Image (cartoon, rainbow, N blue to C red; front, side, top):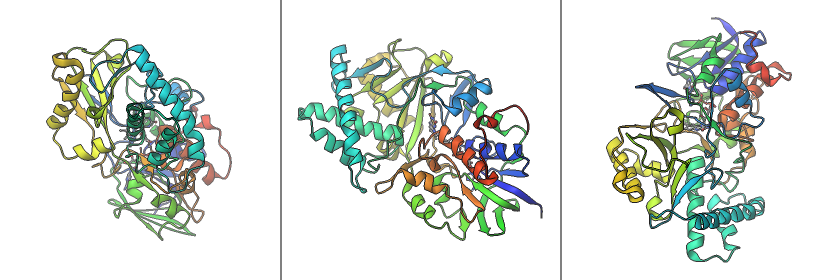
Amino acid sequence: MDRYDTLVIGAGVAGLTAARLLTKAGHRVVVLEARDHVGGRVRTERANGLVTDLGASWIHGIADSPVAAAAEACGMRTVEFTVGGCQADSRPIAYYGPDGVRLDDAAQLNFVEDIRALDAALVDVIAASAVDASYRDVTDEALATFGWSEDRVQRVREYLEHRSEEQYGARIEDLAAHGLDDDQIEGDEVVFPDGYDALPESLAEGLDVRLEHIVSRVEWSGHGVVTSTNRGRLVAAQAVVTVPVGVLQSAEFAIEPPLPEPVAGALSRLAMNDFEKVFLRFPKKFWDDDVYAIRQQGPQGRWWHSWYDLTRLHGTPTLMTFAAGRGATETRGWDEQSVVDSVMTQLRRLFGDLATKPTSVTITDWHADPFARGSYAYMTVGSSTDDHDVLATPIGGVLHLAGEATWTDDPATVTGAMMSGHRAAENILGRAVAFNEIWASSGP
Ligand SMILES: Cc1cc2nc3c(=O)[nH]c(=O)nc-3n(C[C@H](O)[C@H](O)[C@H](O)COP(=O)(O)OP(=O)(O)OC[C@H]3O[C@@H](n4cnc5c(N)ncnc54)[C@H](O)[C@@H]3O)c2cc1C
């Protein structure tokens, strides 16, 4: 049996980044990927002339972003779209009150200022929070310091629930107090009108990627690593495992001997989320031209409260909303028409009969995807931000976990995935590697 230098499990951005750097350094590397394509949770659908990013779509801040640098080097076109981080007001947003009537400028400004005040107060409350505090606990504690009317508190409280669900796909009671600590946006946000998948496609060029190789077992020892797949066994001196947290936690993916501490503990405190995208395409735009997003307040917005106007990407009138947290778990199992009817009921509240039937709809199902098991990982109550980096502690000098969930500074993102793949390669090579080596033109 051939013995490779490194086996990389998973051809998402983390795995491809690690494989690329190791291959460039002269290592014999094989990437094992369960799907019939590379990219993992960066997945672009192309149908009827429409390009739809089903997984990642934003770079959440292009300032000093390695992903922005890589995308530029790959010649990927971008469109500015700075509302991806659930911001209250970074760009024009149309807010509708609980009665379904659009807020005037003064009412909207008051609401946004309340969010800013809350966010400022939250910093110290989170810093002083107990290990087992949830994001609900800390936000309620911060809200209680203001003495606002019940109605004012309720609007902000509800916004915070939406933030937890939309940013992390987790109910606010389930998310750790520190669960949104990484939520900073540096610079504009951008999306990719031609599809985000150009990034993993470029990273994969020239690599030995074996598609439709489902890894079921990884055995490690002082001698190296043996992996079992549906197409046989492969042996290497080292392995980089980049499968999502949900796969790592499943019975279908065995690591033998089992992950030691502190890695096992860190893994047990993270969980895959509930987060799906709903794309609705219309014959005609019925919402304002000059807004990036539409948001509604009040109990009617329990599931469907925010719609993002993607029309600027391709000219086809398109709104995207998220089934996130409760919206995802409570609509799971519904057929497409029922989800569309439910979303359209809310749009008709705001726009009346102008909100016509969509001409096409796409709804993702990352939760049912056996190679993702959710969209990304979140910090459950009791976890600490360090748990991400702890996951990447090298094991026995031969096994390295990488992937979005293993990067404390920017988990749940393509950036986190890329940085973690770079770190795994550095750990294996035992030396620093310039970041731009990832996209530098020489080899593999
Ligand atoms: C709906 C959605 C929206 C998102 N939005 C954004 C966004 O706007 N911006 C952003 O930065 N990030 C976003 N993300 C997160 C981002 O997509 C991920 O953080 C990133 O792509 C993860 O890369 P990775 O390499 O860590 O994991 P993956 O891309 O999941 O790669 C792991 C690979 O392992 C493979 N695999 C799994 N099991 C096995 C097995 N048993 N054997 C072999 N191979 C296996 C998988 O098929 C996959 O290809 C979003 C994700 C989703 C799903």
